[in-house]
Length: 468
Image 1: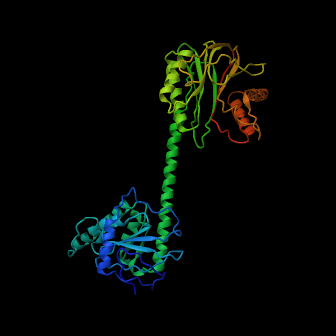
Image 2: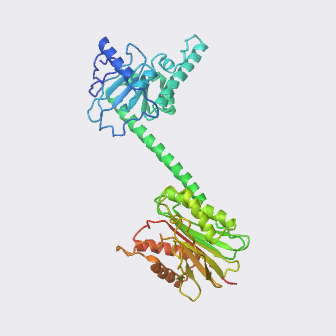
């Protein structure tokens, strides 16, 4: 025959409904156990968490919450799946339960059937029973109070599995307890060691699954928010009124990211000049991506304000020096300002690869890159000369970052390089590709030659003009 659960003792057990617990501890032992319990640090919802190890790795611990001083709640002795004893602790109220809720507790068993138990634990006065219709109202209030106690348990132990215990005639309230947040319910009359052992294991695993599902949903929501944010930070070209065609391709090197340290932009100022820019912040992390966005927005604002060439790059270097997280961070940049007639352009390079130009009937080639200036952030008070370039009537101008040319060729150490990129672009031009198709084919072939995804960010911008 089962006997009341001893308070604050680890209880050995054997699985099965006929097992018998140790008898209650004598007064001296109870006093000692109470003193130990009072010395236990009080847990908080934030600090309390069940162990992450699998339930078979260490013995399970069950915290029983019931308020009968005589130990009216009887729990059979139980073993876990590996034959280890399930350790039992008891608490008479929520204050005591919160103190006993140490990280090694895996599951909580809350008794809803003891008279007025939840009302006292929740700090709500018990509702006296009255005859007639008033008695029905009192019963309703008591049920509400008992679920309030469950809600309080769920508040102080948000990461623990919770079982509720009640009578068979109270099945509706038991089901409501599961809807409130308990993992399962048990009936007192059917309680035996085998059933309780299985219920504890099930509740612990279900709670782990619920937490994992919650974290997954939270991660998906965060990823969606980040995607919307990063997508909103990508530029929208401002070319209204221009006869130039625009195309771009962007691939961040970071896994699952939409935005990297590469950045680009294109705007048309009121005088008809089209300004284009592409840049690369050294590094691949989120800080570099954020700095790239800051530089792009600063470039657009300065360009629309009328700055160009050396003055614009000098101001951007000041922005970089203020905003970069470390002094070692620098950025390369290429700016092009195309005259309103579309036949000439000014070119400034700040440590960046030179653009590529293609014209009908000619092989694509790199624009001159002699006398380029240093990357932004390397030399204080640096200067960046602006070179005038003749474009002609019909042309395509491709700006790119070094992620496109630094991919390897096959399994060796040889890289694609600028010469290899020029040859690749000419092959695609011979096939009649242009615009979006040309950029897509070029990035795809660079990935294929590399034997997989390119590790660096890749940004490519193509501006084209057809005379007449």
